[in-house]
Amino acid sequence: MPPRRLLSASGQASVELVALLPVVALLGALAWQAVVAGQAIWLSGGAARAAARAAALGDDPTVAARAWLPPALSPGARASSASDGAVSVSLAIPSVVGHARLGTIHARARFAPQREAAR
Image (cartoon, rainbow, N blue to C red; front, side, top):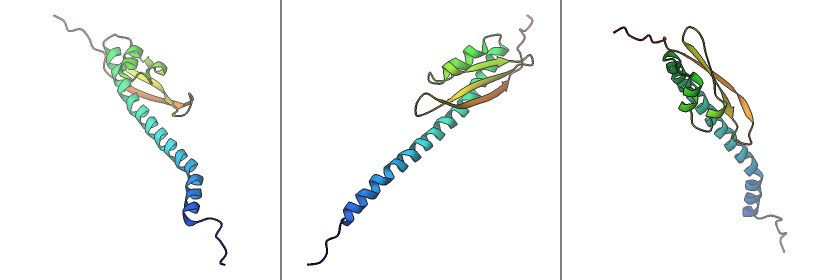
């Protein structure tokens, strides 16, 4: 009688799949985190432009930046304006796992202050 194999070929494939599942899940989470960070970088530029427009018109730049951002990113947004019309917006990069902050993005935009036209 020939010796029996301890694991069949399909059993070996199942064991390898189970061993690789945590690695696949980790790679998926890292890829999704990169997408979220890229979106936060992209949105920070738009929020800075909206805040600069608001500051040029005499409105609050922080309110404008928060209104431009999606609800998940708006609570942590901060805007500060300079005398030359430049506005800096800082935005936290959210984590896809847990409630941690991975870093802060700073974007800057400038819009010349608008003067009321003489009539």
